Length: 489
Image (cartoon, rainbow, N blue to C red; front, side, top):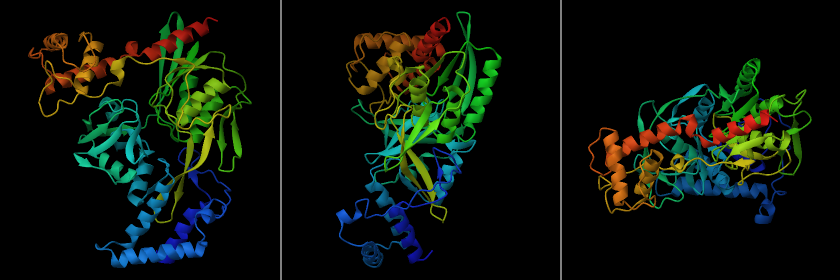
């Protein structure tokens, strides 16, 4: 590729003009007739009195000076790619990113049937790689990673200055290998390290179950992400549940980071009453397109959704459509708040831009970006659902009269496991020591009353186990109770 061709690409990025794109969160083959906008109309002339030709000349001059005179040798390709990344950084949009050939290939693979990694959606927020949501039952979730966790180091090395996808390449790796992530979490005063064993991340996007409660047969559909075939899988499993004669339906999108827009649209058409918007898409000029449901008739049974703070993007579209378009209840927590639609733009050499081109609005036309969707019935999980993994640190153990965030996490977990620590403020009291001894004795560990690596690992593992038991899932249990009530109305 010569300089003129690259400059033409950069100019095309400035004006955001492209045809035949596909949405990451929309239809992979959707053709668009997006008009090529004039950079002068979008503020370029107001910020600089230079013409387009002069701006490109200025760029080329800077490129030449850096390439020829910078103290270290640097290739033109690196400079061009850095220029593209720099333009994207000026947008201050964590979802608009540049992907080189290798990264673009891995991105496509991640939308397939499986990939190897930790299983988490990430974005760049305030210059830090941030967890949007760990996938349900993924290594990331099992290790205790949570939405809005910020990754500061990977395997002990700072990732400051790395692009989002450079960091992702370091996090991903062969199944069975360990990656150590140093995490910054809101409410935690200290950084802590989380070892995550990489695994094979299957993209089984819809799971179904039948719950019998008080003489009622309830269907449960869990949607883990919105991939290309998710709507088809949802339809198949919904029809199978209906053949069993369900009295009500639960739709669980907790921990779902989103996906293709057309997938959630097609699912909406199966459950949202006809002539109701499932979602609205708004472009930069404020023009809106409404995606309507054409369901023949309202379902003969009640429906309830389940959300949490890791429900993002397409999950939020479905949750809002259930509330505003269907008049259904949603149980759980306020969602993540991702209200933009990205479009993947191929640059011709295997590299790609993933660029935010639209906002999506709820069924009623509300913008949830940065806000999220509020459930109609708010239910939080027990405190031990939200604790960070216990990091012992250099001392090698946590013991009487010490005070730290790690002790606070251990106290919350011990309480959840039925061993009363007396307090949960992080001070290792005598009552906490008694609780540790009781835990150690019940698990055939030496009853020292101190939390060493072995005791910490056992506390964490048992906490993960009780989190996975449905009877401890207060959001699910409340949704079941509410659905049974509604089937009796």
